Image (cartoon, rainbow, N blue to C red; front, side):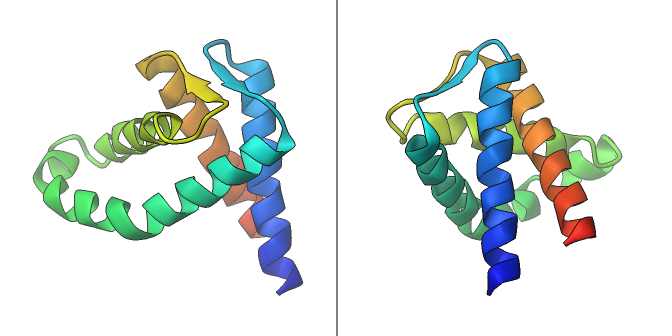
Length: 111
């Protein structure tokens, strides 16, 4: 259980770091980042698998790179639902989603 909480807090800290480092992404505070992490996790568990299946042909054509685009759109999509979390365009969403995914992947490798 502690491992799961540590991974979740790592994602929250990654969202806060991305908001500080990437122009075009802003988060009001820790609690907003916590809500963003929860909503992003729920969307990644429910909607993302369906979208991956639906976009499988284009993912094959792009040799898997379309998954990054899909992650960016989902990251941008979360900004529409969480007050205090804004993403101003696709490029900041792409950089933010990639950064959060990278931190999550590295954190999962160490935890």
